[in-house]
Image 1 (cartoon, rainbow, N blue to C red):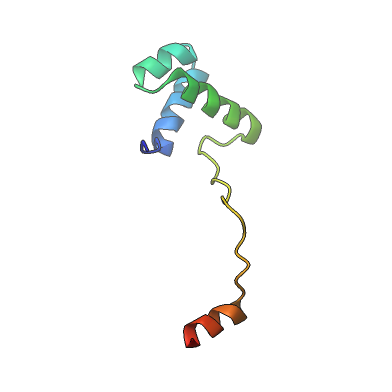
Image 2 (cartoon, one colour; image 1 turned 180 degrees about the horizontal axis):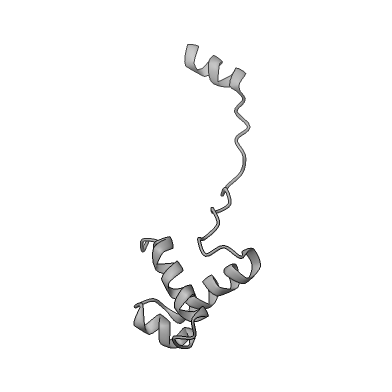
Length: 76
């Protein structure tokens, strides 16, 4: 799986776009990222007004193993 882009790169891309240094397509090429990433980041920025990506949601089901069960397993 490819590594996530840094918040610094996202910030530079969004700041350049806000300053009118080019279209998202031109800036994506300049910063060597996909145009889709620029569009996605700009959409997130418009919704949250933050240039950093929000933390990802937890994935998967919540564990049904309670503290009590964990202590039983440890003693077992």
